[in-house]
Length: 197
Length: 185
Image (cartoon, rainbow over all chains, first blue to last red; front, side, top):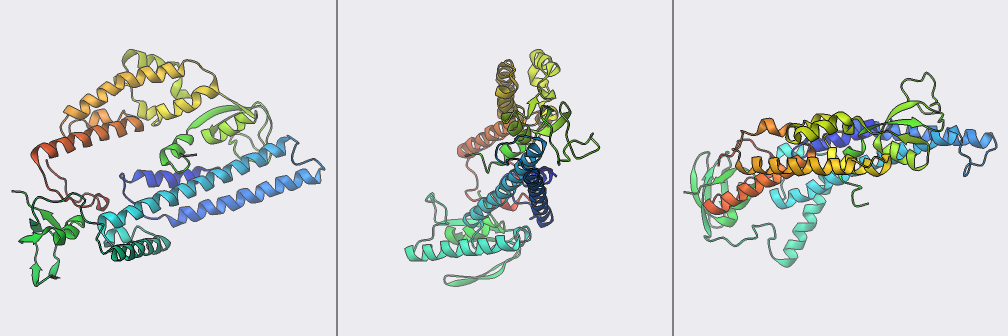
């Protein structure tokens, strides 16, 4: 009661490393919403009690008034915590598109709730349609590279991949000489690493 | 209003303050020591800061100085502030102090915060710039949240400088995926 569960929710979000998502805690979220309804009921009963006694609700300052005030403040506090929880998660999800690309890896996907996945899909769809209108890929590295080709070592099994004019088999621990733009998306997902000799 | 969504601000507001109720409040179960649902006049309750602040503005309670800022802490900081374990007292020492100072009416919280921060700041920065990757963990456990942010900023700027000097991989695994393997520099 009185904002403690809501603060727990926010602390959970802060407990992950910076920029990382924690799994969506729908139980705690629903509990906080239930608490809000409870505060609202108590608030209404106190206001009704004051009205039954014939007091002016706006100006009287008796014990019921302060009780109603405390319930109101707790409601507002719960709202703030819930909003901050959603807002910060949405911010992280938006940045995901720029860092990881339009396809979410499995480990991130299981941390999102259903609505957050929808949000991600729509947002990346909007970005894709914008990029296709401009005919420009905005998610590549901003700094122009010194060398268009790059040497990489494959970390995880990717299998056979079609690229431009040839098909290459990216087996684990094999080394390849690729064009920078092709290799970028694999590196950002952690499937390859760059070799700097 | 700019801090509405800020998570650190929300957690700072949750710090506990001891208050004395000047007016009674009924229908709230916030006082664990009373048997009924009501809070009596003059009863001492521990409330989170967001509630105490609003009630003080409406003159329903009066706030006391929280335990993190009492005489003991002051003496310890004057003795040697670099070794004081501020995180166990209050992980948001500086932010909370800034919020409490105008409300409690104690004029010496401000200078206390300033002197503590000045001496610890130097320690934090020297440790961040010179310590190796894993060595300074003992020192980190006594820092508040703000000082930890400072420490991490200094470390990342040091790492960026080294990378610029010696070159390193241009592309990195996206940080959101977490670190499956430690990077050794």
